[in-house]
Each structure stands twice: as C-alpha cells, then as structure tokens.
Length: 222
Image (cartoon, rainbow, N blue to C red; front, side):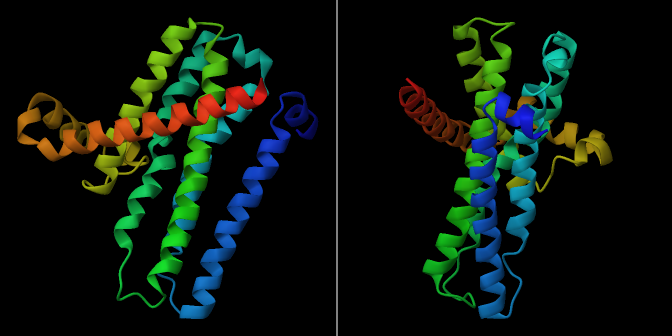
C-alpha cells in the first residue's frame, strides 16, 4: 500500500490530508473539553463522509488493472458521485454559528471553516484524481465540461442534504421517496425556486473555487 501511494504520488498528499484531518479532530475535542458540550462533534462524521470519495479515487489511481476497465472506472464514478456532495456540504454547517453558543463565535467560526476547508480539499483532490483517470477515455475539453457538471450536481446534492435532509445512504434505504423529491424539482422547477437558486449559485461558487485550485496546482507543478 505504501509503495503504491509513493509510486502514484499520493503519499505526500495523503500525509498532508491526514495532518489536516487530525487538526480538525483535535479542535473539536478541545471544544468539548472547554465547553463541556458535544455540539460540534458531528463535524467529524461529515469530514469522514468527505474523505470517502477521495478514498475511492486514490484506490482507483493505485489499481492499474481497474483503470483499464471502462466499466470499473464509470462504475466507480457512480459510487463516487453519491458521496462527492459531502465534501462541500460542510460549508453549510456555518448555519450553526450562534452568538448564544457555549464557545465564542470566533472559535466556532475557525472550527467550522477548518472542517469545511479540509472537506473541500478532499473533494477537489478526488475530482482532480478523477480527471486524470478519465484522460484515457475523454478529451481534455470533455473532462473540463464533465467537472463543471459534477460540481453543479454536487451543489444540488448539498441542497437536498441541507434542506430536505437526505443523505448518501438514503439511495439504499429510501430510494422511492428520494427519487420522488428529486423528480418533483426537475419536473416542476418553478415551484422550487430555492432549490435551483442554491444549486446555481453554490455551483458557481464551487466551480470558481475548484478552477482556482486547479490553476494554482497546475502552475505549481509546472
């Protein structure tokens, strides 16, 4: 495993993301110790869900045999897409900021932003990995277009997670109700203006962030 991480240039990234994740976990434990409450411990679960799509793409990156199979790559894409919105979902946990909290609002802001930034990095790194894997099947222009589409799908996922309270597991537990909610918003878009407002503007925001990340990373590598 270690050799494969080094060979695929994933070791340093994995180590760095591990440090960031540990920092977030330590902050949440510090808050529990000082405040005597467990209010923001759920952020660790949300960060774990953000970690999942990145893990899928790293495993695929370390498996040359799987990469040769179009079925395996696109199958992994389907599973990855179920979890990808979790990476940016943590941004919406800023809704939990409150002056009446048991901790100063500035500390809770730092706490949530730390988790949100780490989650975003997991998402962006997984999308970057996915782009590299798709190069054997699609042109660069098609990959760029696909990335934008996936970011907007992720934004829609953020909406149904935050406002409709669905999660990635519900595709297995309550598929009919979930698809009904999604279908209604597609068939009757003007009855759900908030849905598409959140989707469009969050999609634009994530697209701006991701292509900033991609531009800086490419120029750093060059």
